[in-house]
Length: 238
Image (tube, rainbow, N blue to C red; front, side, top):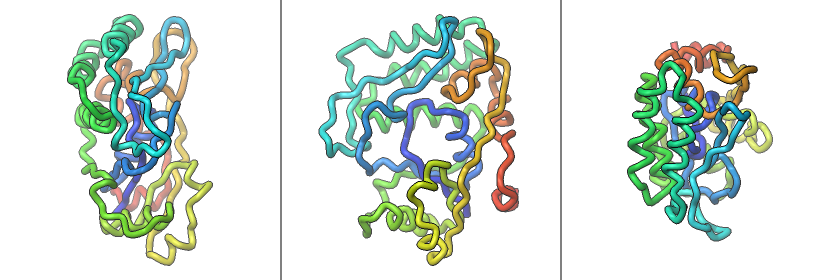
């Protein structure tokens, strides 16, 4: 049983969705401290004027605010601004109409919490790509330990997972011995970013999934999964 555990992000990059697609179970880690100026509420897209940032404004959180409690701010008309950018930058792409309609509904729904908005928007995208990995939240799993590694082991055991497919940056803190002692193998993502047809000049990697969808439509899943992975991971997902 393969599990991936990541904080919920705003229309994240291809590698994020690759982890979801490879996993048997995917868990949003939403019961952790919110980090400002991070991928939880911002990302990047390609425009005729270069790479541009997109973001969802949030109400100013306190230092101890958990991600699951962060509230979206509607003091500025960010929804129309965001949708206008999509129309301006991607209106000539092959799949603009279907992807714009896919994104528009969650954006205009006026969610109170950032985590709920990210979940719904990402869920719509996953369904469109035919990725049906079951998704859960860490906030629904009772916490019995305080350590970061111990908590991840706890989540793996809750879902009966014997393999953790984790992001590359997790190598900086994962205690491999602890996971071995608990019968959990850890594989770190080493994503080889694929190229695909883009507008506006030279190919730019590591953009929001929106860019891939606008340009490739339902071929997106195949492109996302074109990066080679560990044979052990392929063996379990075969």
